[in-house]
Image (cartoon, rainbow, N blue to C red; front, side, top):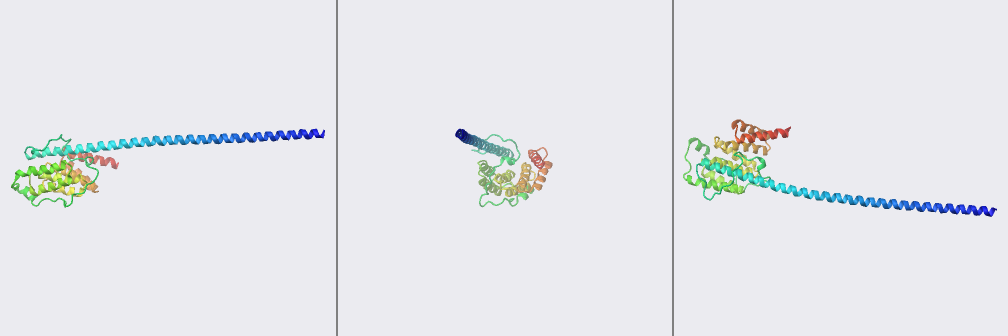
Length: 284
């Protein structure tokens, strides 16, 4: 009887051990399955992350291409606007001078308006003034010649070709050469018919290359020597622009208001009003 009990106890212990072993084996299998699932989830997450990164890289590349395209189109528009504006002054200069276009000078499309170009129409990168070109100053005797009605230089026939040569250099984007030629013209014809235009475009040749202090001197010289010139409104406007670019905002604002007061209804006054409105919006 005792032996039977021992056998039963032994069998029970064996069964319990087997069940315990099965439970342990099952737990291990569950852990392995969970580890595999976690590994698969991590792999899937990594794949999704990589896919998102690839999509973002493609989107960035596409945006860069679009930005470059827009920059190129903007540069082309600026160049076209500048050429049209310069050509307009050339035609006006011929009318003011009362002479026909110089031989060999090709006509280009008419400009948008007769005022000075806005800052958006100027190149973004500065170009240093050419070596040996000092800040322009009014040629000796300019004001006196205008006031007393002194005659033009002895060779008036050479005035137009000399002016056209300087203007062509400006149209071609050779700003340093244009400034040299305009200065040479002003030395030869300080009270010439096209002297106000030459002063203005001398200033412009420096303004478009962001040499604002030298441009300011040229515009001031024009206003001093030829205050009643048709270029005076534009010169005063660009004088204000130069003051803004040189960090003299209060002076620039006062100059623009002076443009509006002195030349109401002109293109220069319209541009001055637009600039002042933009400044008011930025301040708000």
